[in-house]
Amino acid sequence: MEPIYLRIFKDIETKILSGDWRPGARIPKEHDLVNDYGCSRMTVSKALTALVERGLVVRKRKTGSFVASPQIDRTVMDIQDIGTEATLAGYEHRYEILTRKIETLGPVEAAQLHGTTGAEILRIQCLHIVDGKPTAIERRIILLDTVPLARNESFATVPPAKWLLSQVPWSRAKHVIRAVSADATTARILQIERGEPCLSLIRQTWQNDRMVTYVEITHPGDRFQFAGVFHPAEKRASRR
Image (cartoon, rainbow, N blue to C red; front, side, top):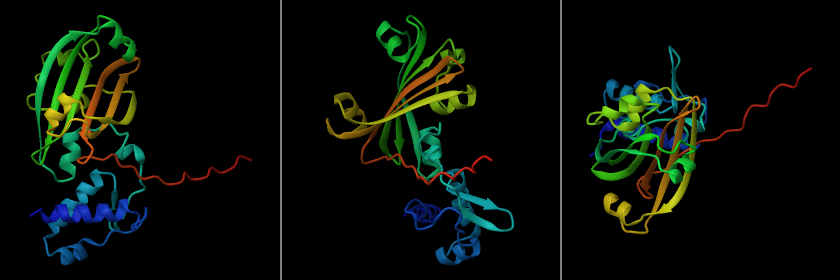
């Protein structure tokens, strides 16, 4: 049976993402949620805190909790790691480093990444497991000229994405989301059939003009989704 706080989180999340609760709408008061779900106030607070961290809810002192103005860059384009997203949603997350090698960029790959041929890189392949199921393969390149500390980092206790976010400020990012079919290796690691549909997020980040990392994260199509909520931009006042 799932925890009560997770049920509260999912119920409110569903109402917000479906549009039933619009931006600015008041979330039921904590004591009302306590009565509705037959739980403690601490349990309700835990659910609301997770919703705040997810960017779906804002809490205002003395007035209560409200549906936040949705931002696509929070759910799709934000630089976050899979472990943090899973934890915020109430799931158990662990990861395994499958391969870790120091190499140099060849001419073809350097051209694709707009990098320098011969530049030293750390190449990592990581498997993310959420609630006991393989949920993503992370194939990452880290530029050692930009991130020299990565050379001796094992990532045994902190996954690569979270470690990078804590170590290197990024100034620019590029994302590409696409549908792909699982090749033999991907299918074996993710425990799916070859050719099954997957979602792939390709992300590249820079610090000023220096590339920090390039990563391709592949998810089974039935175990993950990229979500974004849009609303019309406010009209700007005309100049006089």
